[in-house]
Image (cartoon, rainbow, N blue to C red):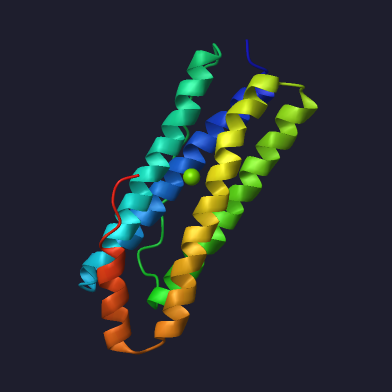
Length: 164
Ligand code: MG
């Protein structure tokens, strides 16, 4: 039986992953509304990935004999300013998620819950990738600046992102 504090924290993290999915889906819709379908595609794939994260926690809690209790998901923003501002928000959000995963790791350490620590290793590695991929887009957007041609090239490039 899993420790009840860890169970509660995992339930909250399921909600956090769903919120991430919702946030990126909202960003995707914003890009569609501005006719940048490549940015929209990248964010939609990102949104899909967050659902995979949520389900990993969901399955883990069930496997450990815990009780999944779904929490309500906050409404995300619908306006995101420039694409640079929006991707800076993505990066900032992923850094916050990294902090949440680290807090979960600290909790599992304090409870001496080895199985949860091993499960979290996957997420710790994943967060390195998440931050790195968001940072790469931020850097490219900084280079593009206000140049419409550069933005369109970047849009086309991000449109090529496939399912992981
Ligand atoms: Mg995630």
